[in-house]
Length: 403
Image (tube, rainbow, N blue to C red; front, side):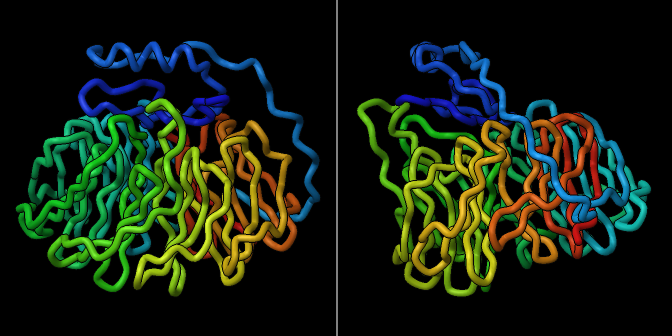
């Protein structure tokens, strides 16, 4: 493996699960010797990676004064503690959480705190929101449900690390653990309804990617470059597709995992594979439509024509949705770890490791806007109406207008 750790999100190998942790992010190259040393000492609760690169990203080019992105409001909810958090959206509210255990309901207009929930446990992943239901999970696998006013409804345990935000799907709360198990809990009382589990390789990424749902089906990415479709009602597998095969002589070289959540679009589900390929499969059959040799530790964005993805080096690609052909490639964000792109008001938006938010033209990849936050990594960036909400490693929450 020539570049063994372009962007892992947690910097240690977990002894319990035999996985490379992805709770926090780093865009520096880590030397193979450090990884191998960690792999040899799996009896330790955590193993720090050795070595880092002194490579610095090139200077950013100036962008035109287009006002493509502007700050609407900002708030602070507490540090991430090395985990990735994503917000949830309710009725004119933005729900955000921090590792310290607080959950905030912020007014969509103005960002004032409407409700604050003190869970008194360390949280990870983010917030799942349904009708009068707010759900979070602790780092120890406790799932906590509250009503919109912050009153506790129930608590359940899934006996595993939860790095992804729970998802409220119909009458169920879907929770994914770091070892790949997917639990369906009753949204009324938290009782377990079913568990989906499949075999995984000895060494896998631990990511905060959860599941996506559509018309009674859940879609989730897995190690070995796989995307799986599962029935929401009973948890039975529908199909399994392989976007990218694992390659290499060692376990480290053979890590080829879907590290971001798949994205649904009409008759396709698209995803990117770390140390693998980016591609799309048919939602009904799981047949692979196409795949390209583009490795990414993040997710993809899809519009009517294209698939957008940032690779492990920080290059941003636009690919033809029908055949995967490259339409353009932006190289101006290399070594900046752009993360998962989103589409807002016909613009392509990414957030980087230095707290910058970049706006691009989806037509040709030109940089047309830039916005600074608090200087720490953008750990999540989600579309919300005609704008976006970003959360940073320092705990800043930024509502952004995109024109």
